[in-house]
Amino acid sequence: MSDRVDVLVVGAGLSGIDAAYRLQTECPGRSYLILEGRDTIGGTWDLFRYPGVRSDSDMFTLGYPFRPWRNVNAIAPGETILDYIRDTAAQFGIVERIRFGRRVVSASWSTPAATWTVRTAGGEEYTCSFLYLCTGYYRYSGGYDADFPGRADFTGPIVHPQRWPADLDHTGKRIVVIGSGATAVTLVPALAETAAEVTMLQRSPTWMLNLPGGDPHEGRRLSPVAARLARTRNVLGATLLYQASRRWPERVGGFLRSRVARELPAEVPADPHFTPGYGPWDQRLCIVPDGDLFTALRSGKASVVTGAIDTFTDKGVRLTDGTELPADIIVTATGLAMVTLGEIAVDVDGEPFDSGTSGVYKGMMFSGVPNLAWCVGYINASWTLRADLTSRYVCRLLNYMRRHDIDSTTPAPPPGTDFTDEPAMGLSSGYVRRAAGVLPRQGGRRPWRMSSNYLTDMPAMLLGRIDDGHVRFARTAR
Image (cartoon, rainbow, N blue to C red; front, side):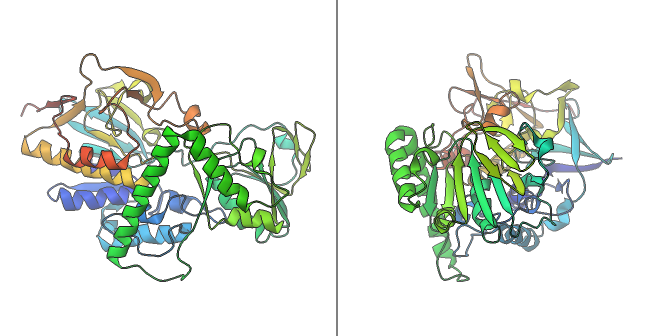
């Protein structure tokens, strides 16, 4: 026997809780369940436990629009975000709809039955009419760990931030953090508070922007109106910065470089340490709240080195120019391992689905796959902005199907639709390049091209036609 619901949501993280709220408020006649592979709510924000973990987007836009973030601190610690997600699930009665410890491993679509059959690692089986994957886009079992030469020679701990040991004592230790992205920028000042010495070893620099982390009156709460105004302001600001970066990369790059240069001590030049070899927003822009990284550099508690790694040694890291970086602990903040569909084996009528050869429709569905959506947030703005739009569109689609007695909706590109070799996420970041073979393809124009603009996506997703000529509707013979 299997449990049957109208909509099965996979994942109880930031996106899954948003999806549940939208389903129960905008599709009140639909039954749903959430299957969560872990034993608790929170997803990313429960998984990551490294020192200083915090949001890399402002919380006014990362928070839920139906429950505005009212804390004055726009950049929040991970535990505060986790509490916010869990409180939201409790407030709206979502917790009762979650089944924990159910890691989904496969999903099979039957056209005659217009049904998905979903199986868990524990052997349980669930069926549903619509499958909504809120699994994010990275592998939960482990991040990307580069195969550095000499790893076995190093005598101390080598730690990836995604698997941070709870008992790791870094007090008074010399630490080398390999990386220059948001995780490394978070770790370095946090570790520098108690470590003897922290070196941020970057093989290539990242564009950074120093922004206030929040109001100095810690603990003060904003009114609901003020919180919504802050959200609107930050949406507009982030959109303008991104669009300017794409149109005038040299000007924006010069602006960002000059801001960082003013924060650096004399012995740390902006070039080469903070002058990337790519344009702003070719990779994700790294926010430095309250300039804490630069404060650590000025204090002498942290340093930055830019260079190529030759090998790990028994005592640290040696670079190709011969520089030796002594370390008691090495942290490999080398990024995520990106996956699609939560590594769930998907098939349609027994035919395995290959995401790498599929076209992506509205940034959420796949050509040839009925009644399935994958929730993916923005790469150039807060994740939740797009995740919430996707959930609201799913609800619009479900309501449309019910009104018109439709059993299945399958994205189907019309003849002449051109697809490129460009993956669904338009960044040059290492984790995107490594996953190019599994990410769905983009078309040359909407709805087969993912937009990175919330201001244009919002009317398209909330008001655009469901029957736009790019989907195939079907009724199952009854």
